[in-house]
Length: 99
Image 1 (cartoon, one colour):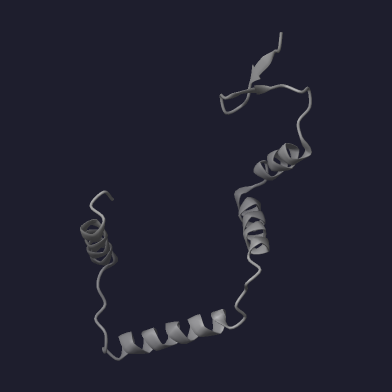
Image 2 (cartoon, rainbow, N blue to C red):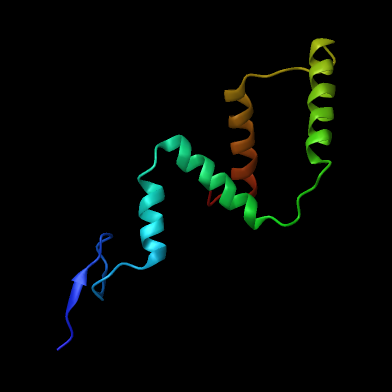
């Protein structure tokens, strides 16, 4: 008769008497302070993206500078964040009532 043991997440699984190396590494990382875990997470995510756009940061800085000038010169109207979020949610709900 096969024996099953409950895993940490409550699901059933076979118990083989040892934890995999990957699970041990995950446990080690989860034991780190939050800032260190965030750093490791950024590294992992960056390692998945092999299509890094070298000019993206420069382009975003140009957009930020342009928008900042437009606001300072009064050429655009700034709205409170809560109002913008309500408007976006209303537009999304109009397009997709299930949301």
